Image 1 (tube, rainbow, N blue to C red):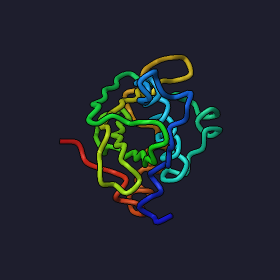
Image 2 (spheres, helix red, strand yellow):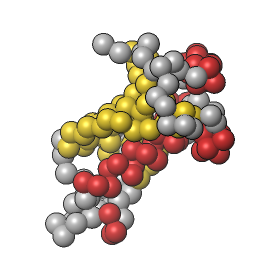
Image 3 (cartoon, rainbow, N blue to C red):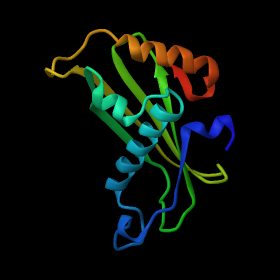
Length: 150
């Protein structure tokens, strides 16, 4: 796995992920995006799921959108990539792409926005220092995994 592939997961759709037309059901994409997002946190930001559970905040999905560009069928070999948007807002914005494993065909593009919420369920208006530090450190090591807001 190259450094560039650290922000990707490999997926092969299984029987339980398809509908009666042998296409991947639309609800499954969100599971894959979550897997890619957790992989990004672990492999790029060095933040594990346990770190998140023990942190003083939650990352709450508050917005999502998806563009289905081409149909994905059972047993397709896919790469799901996640990238983090660098912004001055107190949100975590991810962009996702689903490609065939050779990156010749783009099947899906999506975005999610996570609000940073305290354990008391109050929206935080500043980025937690631990996240700021992880992003700064990781950007220097893996700049391909990030992009800037428009």
